[in-house]
Image (cartoon, rainbow, N blue to C red; front, top):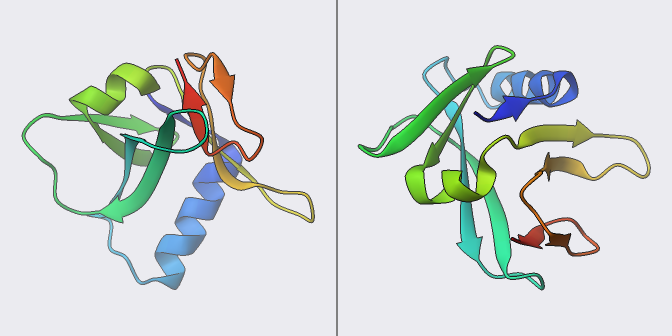
Amino acid sequence: MLFVSDSAKEKVSEIKSEENLTDDFFIRVSVTSGGCSGLTYQMDFDNEAQPNDQIFDDNGVKIVTDLKSFLYLCNTTLEFSGGLNGKGFHFSNPNANRTCGCGESFSV
């Protein structure tokens, strides 16, 4: 399962409204090689599911990932932090053994 915090839900709704994205758009999350810790998160809006996608709906937000990425993301929560010291969107991943200082890459 992938989870979405209340703050992330609010920000996703705000962005979808600003970008005039219809309800058929969802958040696509994936993990790729790169970053200072070895693996990097990628997140974008998409409206086309792929055959091996894992589809979750949490807190009213549809979030989709490919099967390979899901192995790294299982039980991860999408968070949003605003304000002067805010990070924007970030992931609270219980599978990560190490994360970099910026929080955009991790290792397992």
